[in-house]
Amino acid sequence: MAASESYQAERLRMVRNQIQRRGVKDPRVLQAMQDVPRHLFVPSERRHQAYADGPLPIGGGQTISQPYIVALMTDLLELSGGECVLEVGTGSGYQAAVLSRLAKRVYSLERIPELASQAEVRLAELGCTNVEIHVGDGSVGLPEYAPYDGILVTAAAPRVPEALKEQLTQDGGVLVVPVGGRAGQILERWRCEGETFQIEKVAPVAFVPLIGSQGWDEDESPDRQWRSR
Image (cartoon, rainbow, N blue to C red; front, top):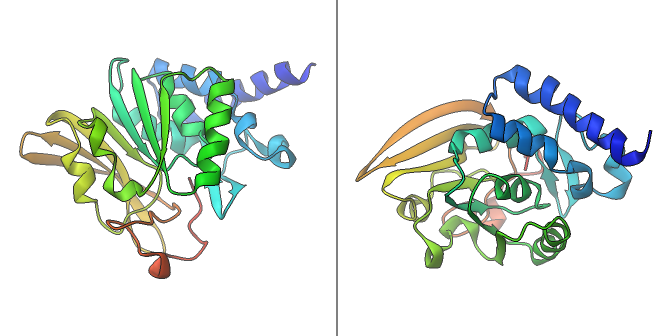
């Protein structure tokens, strides 16, 4: 079997066994997870593990999230195809690639310039022309392109950043973010309804810290027990 066919078969198993069986049912999300070549977003020495049921290191103390977590967070945004989405924490670019297949426009923020540059190259090679990557403090969002129909935060905040809440579309905008402390967090979904929010606590998770003025300070950030991204 050719390498490309082997990876395609692994993606299909990943979707069926890791994602669909855990309750993600949206056919568009499942198709995006099946289409995006996850192995291209991990270091070459880790490609044999690309479709395993867990996070993987990508360098700089960061990781690419477990496939199920990527699918779950994407599913929680409830995208239909015409939305403008902000991703906080580009990392490898994998989550942005998935979002690019489900939204009209994706803006992605990364605080580590090297990771942002690498992700930009990968996304361009895959033809993800509707993704725009910026370098900066993700905890304050990207107000120049707001409001966003969806905001997805791929790093853990000690509390939900006010700046991100303010950048949501007021009529049904959705923010998906891990919130908590050192030992772990709860994945939360905040849905904006005018001046109020409907808040749903979804699942326990463990993410790298959101460093920034409305996240963790560099010197108080949790240690590397933060795992997923």
